[in-house]
Length: 479
Image 1 (cartoon, rainbow, N blue to C red):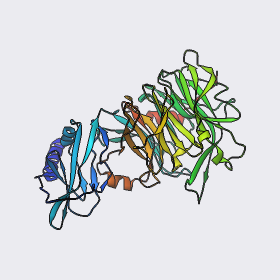
Image 2 (tube, rainbow, N blue to C red):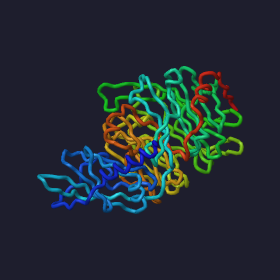
Image 3 (cartoon, helix red, strand yellow):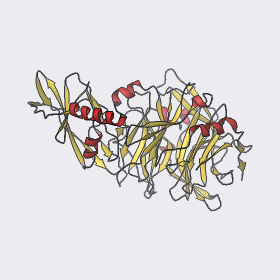
Image 4 (cartoon, rainbow, N blue to C red):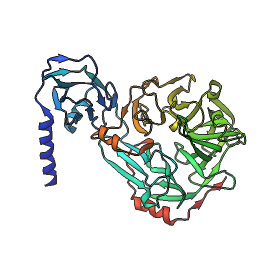
């Protein structure tokens, strides 16, 4: 019965939304004012419908592939059937019509370019934009072919504590890790149907494990260990600054529950952070800066370069030399969040003026490095005048999701950009919603650490909660 009602409702909606053709009597030279701005974006053919709104006050309609969609309070909604038909094309032309002085006029048309598919799921944390306190946060997953979102875990089940740094092994949610802070603190490792709580602070490391990245073999996870503090400013454009007083990079063996490091990744006079492995597992990349004596007084003097060291997965050993791939401090810049493309050719990083916590730096932009030639360039089409920061590659290397504050300077939202075979980005599009203009205006949370997944995490969340609340944890050892 419920299915029949849904079919009848859908049919009525299609009848109302897609009406007879409108013949405009005039044209307007400009592109239409729409939210989100989906004009001339490149999209994957398996993405959910990119509904958008005309922001003017006049009656409006949308013409697309012989169909006319009437705007409802300015919102254009695509039926699943029509959207699927549109996504079978290589390019889709859209024209917004408005009724002015009793006559219909057509804005300049724009196109959507349709490319290969994207990974089917996205994971992220939803968190209030400030970092001094919170009441509610959670780790979520979203099916990208629809608008369906579900909670992996929310902190109302764990005493209102912090949960962060969720990371999967190559997009596989059955191999994932995240941290629980404060009450019930520990690192939660999901390995198939097994979940394990780890106590990761040792006598030989300055903190518990922090920023993670999985080795492609799924046998290791690279972590930073950080003494991190934050400062708040009244008269600085970057109102929040998160900085390290000390930081190192180590590698954790999932099988033996041991950590190891090289003297070149755990030095006294440098800050090392944000590790990531190459797709072949033979290189460990990270960011490194010369340590300063007084933090936060000298925090603007800390600038990170991009480095790598050889890694042998056979015996968990490291190379004897450190290779600098980009001496950003010599150019007056700093880098964070290095991520290597699945084919191993490109490395995308965030570049900004100083420090390493770029998500609050308005000058942060995405840059690409060719690992064969060491040529680098900004992802101009993807960047904006505001913060563009944390990013993640799709499994086929053609798409990237990243967090941006371009909307209002306060909240990070997930954007997707197409990366061609030369490492050049296309104009990005905002994560689609049924009514995106209304949704994002009401949402008082930021999307944090958006990353692709090849499937949803299906572990019952109360099983995770039980381990968090009841387990005393397993102590990590030093190799």
